[in-house]
Length: 369
Image (cartoon, one colour):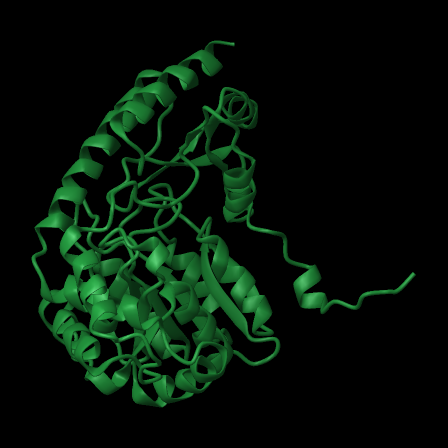
C-alpha cells in the first residue's frame, strides 16, 4: 500500500473546532457557533458589485488592489482611526485570513515565537505553525482582557504579538491605556504588533483604539466581513510600514495574485457609501447581547459583560456544555480557543431574536437536567 507523505507541520494541526461543530449541526439546531453576521450584505454594496460585473470589471486587478479602494481605505484610516497610511502602504487581500497568512510568511523565521491571547482566535496559532513559527498564548485577566504583566514577561525574543480588540472569542475591548502599554512594551522589545481590528465597529461600551496610534512597528489588519456583513465576499486588507508591506506583497503575489475584482468594487461602494447600515447592525447586536447576557445571568452564570464583537464567553462547565449541544444549540467549547479556558464556551449572538429565544429555552432545559 502506498505511503502518502504529509508535512509534519500540517499533520500536527487539527481541523478548526468551530468548523467541526458547524458541519455537524443537525436539522433544527440553533447555530450559535459560527462568527458570521446573520444580516444580508446591504443593497447598495450588492448593487456596486452588480454594476462592476455589467461594466466588465472582471479581470485581474493590481496585486495591491484597485487604486480607488486603497484611496478609500487610506481616507477611512485617517478619519476613523487617526492613522496616516498612504495607499501604497495598503494591500487588499482575500479576507483578513489571507492578510494574517501573508504577514506570518513575510515576517516569521523558523522557530520564531508568535504571541497572542489565550483564549484567542483559532487561526493565529495555526498560521504561525504553517509559517514555521512557534505559537504562544498569553493568559487573560479577570475581565477577559490581555494580562499586561503576563504579556510583558513573554515579549523578550518574540517576533510578533497579535492583538485582537474587540476580541474573539471573548468580546473584550482593550482600553486605550492597555493598547498603548502593550504596543510600547512590544516595540521596545523589538516585537512587531499585528492588530486585528475586524470587529472595530461593534463596540457597545468603551471605544476602539487602533494599535498603530501608539507605535510605528505595527501592522493593521481589517476586513469588510463583519462591518458590512460580507463574509462570503472574502475581502480584507492590511496596512503598515512600507518595509513590511513590500515583503507581504511578494507572498500575496504568489498565493493569491489579487483579491476578487468584484469584491473590491463592492467594498469600494461600502466604504464610500452610506454607513447607517453599520449602525443599525450594531444596535441590533447590542439588543441581542443584552438579552442573552441577562438570560444567562438569571440562570446563575456569572461572567464579564463583553464590550464588543458579537460573542459571549461564558463559564458553563463541561457537563452543561455537553447537554446544551445535545439539545441542538451549537456553541463552541473554550478548548477550541486555547488551553486557558476549560469549561468555558463561546456563544455567538449573530443569530435572529427568535433563534436566541429558542436557544435560551433549550439552555434552561439543559441546565435543569
